[in-house]
Length: 615
Ligand code: F6R
Image (cartoon, rainbow, N blue to C red; front, side):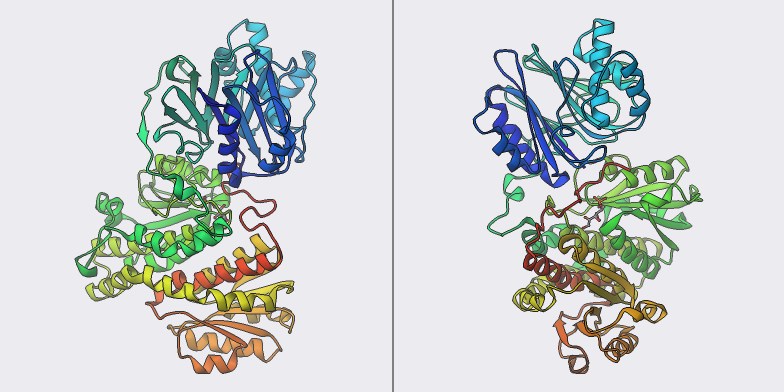
């Protein structure tokens, strides 16, 4: 939800900032802009509606010199995507420029007050209010940029990560954060700040993750200074080493990041499992669980909060935790959780699942759970993000940076970690027998190879996708463990192809959606030969007898289904609780190829952003 970058150093700032914006484009891509400080003390601001590439075109022939600057790629919240609403936003005199990720809730009141002081506004953004406020404070208090930013932020309600620079001050960038991420990279005589570490890793692996309510001063000749917004006292500058490589951020010969990430899954699942299954599958070792054994012994109930794809993983997690641990599990949309009068006690464990670790709704949900005394456990991908820093314990999925906006490898990583958690906690509680642990853990240890086999369906799915390119609606059905897989398959198709798709529990179809079935609407049915297989067969027959077209995901050698369904895709047999990992891969590919046939931008689908840091 918007990406910001800032640079101060010896290099050409424009090059660093553009490269950084390209890394952050997954966060928003409806407009982009840049502000550069030239040696002549002028502030040059360039903006363009559209992608970073459009900004590059708009800047052709302009003066892009300078070694300091800030830049922004936007996902619109206040005001339509256009040049005026793009960031950087500038103050009335044009002497202060600011980029912002987040939302300012009290901007209406502040805007009215500033208008009464004679300020006029060009854009519809909340951000312009903040930059005008900074100028107003600076002029009325006769203070420096740092004090003006600090004082202004004390009047702001909402979420922000900001970077601010001013004309005639080519040595200072002021940055701050509250509820939106901000990372500062410390290189040799250069500093680069960004919404995440991806723009930084090419320059340095030393980073400082700014905490909420901290303000940083980046000065050309002085070490990074971090202060508390409230007390103005210095805060510790905790320098961490990045575990990320530039190669992980490239497409690696694939057409798109999404395809790369689908095909990476054998390796990412191996990384996710590494060191966690020991003694030939006899034991599962998840330190987050083992270090908090008593919590998992005393727990009355687990509540899982998540959004989107992570919420689908949560539904699968519910099933497997209930099976293995005999603990009641509830799954809540993080966005609804705090508005549903949640009854949470200190006997509850609240698990937050999030790829980015920055989703605002999930962060708000865990804050509420913590306030009510729950033990909060995070399952995240991005190391050092806000959710892992605000939870009592947790597990990283370790699938590497996910750049395609549609989540693929993070989903299979999340389900894998939830399986490991269920097995480990089940062992701690004595609720799962040794034979089950070994069977599931050994199959999980083999899952990278199993997924590699599933990926061999690539060509077959590509061919099949052509049959469905022009369908307007899809139904995805599954039962038990694979009802969430159906939801996830439908979501993948919707987000990248813009075709309407509904995921449904197969047996619920007869209570309504069956009315939609006709020869125009393909039905994708997940039907591995598991405990619910016979029942799913009935659902296939119900669709077929109404003239529907069926694509069935089945285990090899299922001749009965091959006769019944119009198309079958074969996936290897695995224990029932692992079928979602295996069955979701062909659904990712099907969505991918249908979207490609429709010439969609699969890495950056319209209206979406990878990391939803606003409510
Ligand atoms: C779908 C997708 C989104 C995210 C959701 C939560 O492909 O990516 O639905 O799953 O926005 O994001 P995280 O997991 O970062 O909290």
